[in-house]
Length: 180
Ligand code: ZN
Image (tube, rainbow, N blue to C red; front, top):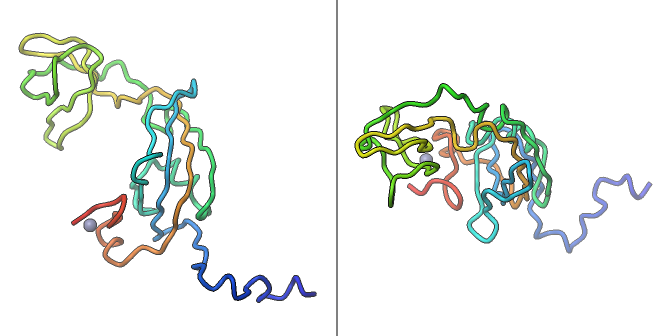
């Protein structure tokens, strides 16, 4: 019967622990991630740097990743495998176009394979150079990770309730989020 007692485990040593919050709508999640391709090669990682943070339910991260995060809590580590469609979409060959070089923002020499920023009416977006000319370039407007199955290795650091201000802005404030 002792094990069923609701207060068991809440000894004096546990007073400093904040209550566990599960990831769900209106929570802010701080986490480390390592992004790998299908071959297991690391593409990106936050390990060794500042953790990422997102507001759950606000579309801040890939929907399939957000779904996998749901119900997890601080200290959880897990992997999420996404097919290309769940990640950054299939690679569409027709998404190639020729644009004036002056619409591209890049450092160094424009060359095939280079990921550059295309200045569009909706802001900058990452595109990949297919062929570079003097005045114009053929670019691939698929997301650089389109067509790839990806794996995220996730480590949840903290989960907390979002503030009213964060909810109204639709993003996280403070470490790993917006500073304004
Ligand atoms: Zn804000």
